[in-house]
Image 1 (cartoon, rainbow, N blue to C red):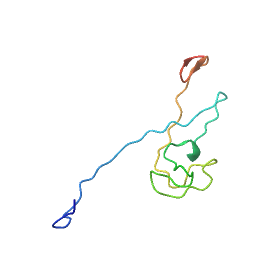
Image 2: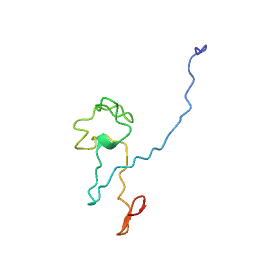
Image 3: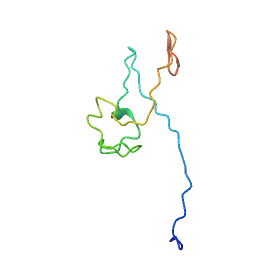
Length: 84
């Protein structure tokens, strides 16, 4: 459907996404692009900001738009999925 009389403006749409990065049983956090579902299939481009990601298996890209939070404390004897 072509715009017959040009473009007067735009309507803005926004989105908020949540990404859960893994923490192993020893408490080590794996906050890396390779664990993000928004890393492209070829593992080279972030689909959130269209930036090329260097070393996605080691780091989070410099221009990552995610705000990384502190992990929630999981009580001893519990896992993220309930009791061990």
